[in-house]
Image 1 (cartoon, rainbow, N blue to C red):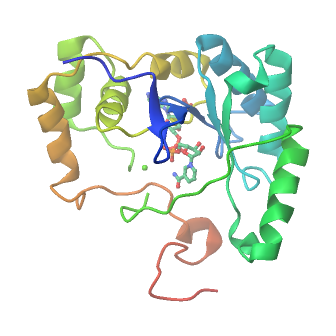
Image 2: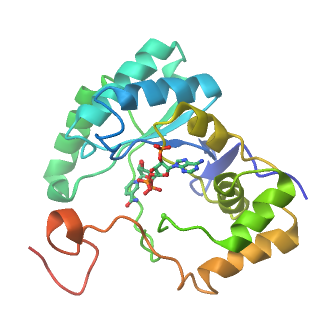
Length: 222
Ligand SMILES: NC(=O)c1ccc[n+]([C@@H]2O[C@H](COP(=O)([O-])OP(=O)(O)OC[C@H]3O[C@@H](n4cnc5c(N)ncnc54)[C@H](OP(=O)(O)O)[C@@H]3O)[C@@H](O)[C@H]2O)c1
């Protein structure tokens, strides 16, 4: 048994790799984190060793990408060492619009390129904020936090993780998640999501701010 890897292979030939741990940058709570927090968080993350940043045109209507780009340039970390992920917005899905979205991304980021992919999964969306005694038990056994245990569990499943945090201590904490999780403990965490992931829940509830369920594929809205 070994700790999860630093990176996972991408694509069928495995020629390129994605760093297993990244920083999510979506939706910092403005009551807690003032404008500029994304830039500071990306700087904190790059200094802590992160080399994978997840962003999107939609995060702050370009402001998120702007701050990500500023932080990358200010960090001094070579661009080619950083894996920057952006997304194709729903309103740019027509083939002729894809390049438009990409050009906007690059303009906001101030970068020359990003890997460009948004893979839809059958599982839907990342967890609801809740404490589970099983996670807390496993965490105390390893002297880790529940967040570190869940991140390590996902990495062991071969899933690249991008926890969002604007808190410098938690950014560093989240990066420290490559440790050996014993099979029994892996199974205990695995059971929480259910055999087919049916007990998992996503936390981005779009109805609250869009006014409709963005993920309901049965109904075409708005
Ligand atoms: N969820 C989605 O639907 C979605 C969609 C598209 C893309 N993404 C990407 O995925 C990233 C992550 O999304 P998410 O929904 O998982 O994030 P999230 O729930 O929006 O944010 C993570 C929350 O956990 C807190 N946190 C972070 N590290 C922690 C720790 N070690 N212990 C306790 N609390 C901690 C953060 O607070 P602090 O900031 O105060 O630490 C924040 O409130 C996004 O930022 C984005 O890049 C997500």
